[in-house]
Length: 445
Ligand code: 2SA
Ligand code: GDP
Ligand code: MG
Image (cartoon, rainbow, N blue to C red; front, side, top):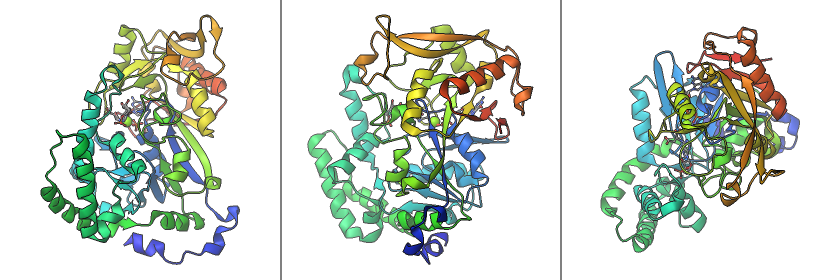
């Protein structure tokens, strides 16, 4: 299969010159997630040979709409539907195997085929177990007012296991099952001591995982070596799909209301073993307004009527949990910060069409506290208290944009909105999304 043949002929000597390598394209969420990354990845995946995930788990929910079919991806890279490309789950991803196979089954029912030949899983990726998910729920229930609003997919507890260094990796599962069983028992008892209410049937779980070990073994590879080979081959186009988003990044996001992985550009290096010098295009995906699912600060959160209109028109409900997303206006202070962290080479503005009905559209352009302009992005939840947002208000366009395929076809006020974002962020706009479908996009030169 592709995995085996792809590992042949790796030549360390040829890794010396930067110009011998391919440039990698990275797609990252610039806000609090659900910007429409899946759609942009799908668009770029039409010409990609390898599409990779480097962080997060099945907390992510990426939607790709092709004609009448809406695919939801959580762990699978959104490129998996492209028959010509290999999909990679890198070492930085945390993998819940029951969730992965459930996702595969659901997408098979929608027409996904041949994934067995196209999916590679890093031997170094950590496994999420059901008890991690239970612990996620228990931890949430103990948080009181500090509720994060996690997806309860076990993401935090699994990355904790990884950092505690008693986590279990894919290699443990596929290499020597006795060793896996030992590690599994130790990890389960570690959690049972801390959470006596946990229900873990170790023997039953081990039987299930024995089956998984056989199923996934052919897909498990050293993805560092695989990626290295792809980077050496100039004909290969490599695409990396960020999950979650910059403001959910464990370091740079609005801590502690964040996820437990790095979701910004650094995760490409740490979660795939791709050296930084190979990063060529770093595209930020920016929703034309702003949403957040879960708790935490949201300076530009809209008043109830606007919030409802955005949620209803934008169908702003979680892809993984179905939770309603909180909605508000575009926040340029946050976007500038996201750009400082990621160094975007271009952005995609998605869901412009959702703003079609508004009489005016607003952009938060500055944060003030006690009338004083803040020079830096607030670095704690407490620091967000008492923030006043200064807005730039632009006239709406109040006409449909979903049929537009050229920038010149957009109403002039919509053009002005896009150009204003571009100017305020100083990053070129490469795409504008005007509908759910794969084809509903305007490409700019
Ligand atoms: P977790 O589960 O530990 O990663 O949650 C921590 C915080 O990260 C937020 N988070 C998300 N925010 C937006 N979209 C996400 N994916 C799904 C989607 C979410 C869903 O695509 O709609 O279905 O609800 C996602 N995943 C994590 C989460 O809300 C917490 O604030
Ligand atoms: P992701 O997590 O960033 O991949 O985004 P999600 O899939 O969670 O949420 C984005 C939602 O917006 C999905 O339902 C997409 O189908 C939809 N979407 C993406 N781009 C556009 C767009 O330009 N217009 C409209 N109307 N919907 C879009
Ligand atoms: Mg999503």
